[in-house]
Amino acid sequence: MREGGATVLTTARSRPSGLADANLFVAADITTAEGCVAVADAVRKRLGGIDIIVHVVGGSSAPAGGFAVLDDNEWHRALNLNLFPAVRLDRALLPTMIAQGSGVIIHITSIQRVLPLPEATIAYAAAKAALANYSKGLSKEVSPKGIRVVQVSPGWVETEAAVGLVNALAASRGTDYDGARKALMESLGGIPIGRPAQPREVADLVAFLASSRAASLTGAEYVIDGGTVPTVREEIPTEERWPAWSLQQPPHLDAPMMGPPRSTESKSLRDIAIGHGSLWLASEAPSTTCAPNWATVAGASLNLPTANLTARPCTKPVLAATSPPKIATSSSLVRPESLRGINVREKMKNSKATPEGVG
Image (tube, rainbow, N blue to C red; front, side, top):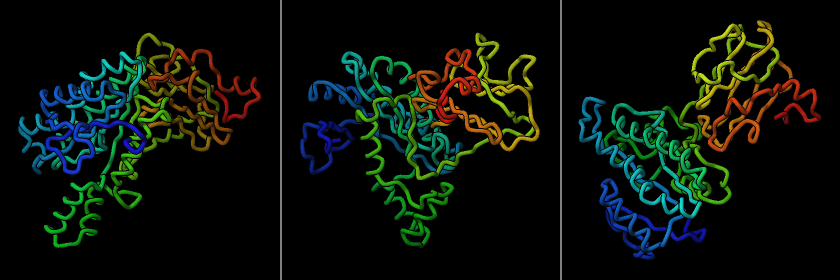
């Protein structure tokens, strides 16, 4: 960000050597409420305002041994390091952003929020999951006021601390750095690209998300893990496949639900719960002879700023209903009321657009 011309104030418990400008560093322990107050005061006095907040602090020092060795102190330590600094600093600095009608907040979470390692970091993983949930909730509240809130979720990043960990593992196992590095990757279930991420790669992603080039992105999580977290696609069983699709309004919109429909059409409807409502995919009749069909909502856990709905009817052309204003809203939720009366097949028949362009 400094390379791009931004004035960047940083904080840590101790002052590093070789600071270019000592006035742009605050020595504070932001795991405490007092430390967060000190940082917020320095921002107001030294910067005169705030445009971007990047919450990087996090980590775990918990002992190995699973849940039984994590007493209340370990849990409090994990929350004080990985959750509360973001909550406290946002609370102190967001009013300035709201007053100016703009700003960006980036929370660094972790893939462990969905891929916890119970042997040693379950408290850390739970705290990062809480941070991700808080970040999403905050985005819904402040995005309409001009403040974007996004998450960056790294996997293993080869920082200086990580290098030290690998060297320690190598020494304890009687192997070299590459051997210990490979073993650590395997303990995560493997990294498809064959290496951990580099700090600069994560920094580049953060810089992009903070920039005007990402002006439409909010409420989303961006995973940078080299493919560590596995992705599962559930295919609809053969007996539930349909040859012709349309988008229909749920018959009971006023009763939000997350399960099967309670109607006489329940055998021919399949619902996908999205946010506070449901998007329904329906057909005229079931088919047991179709080629594989499936319905997916593409995105990062449905947290991208738009959600793309794709229905594949046997071997027929792909019908796609995409991005705003017709399907997705700025809060990343597909609202059922926005789908009322839309019939994809009728849309295709009355439009000169190609099937892939049908909205």
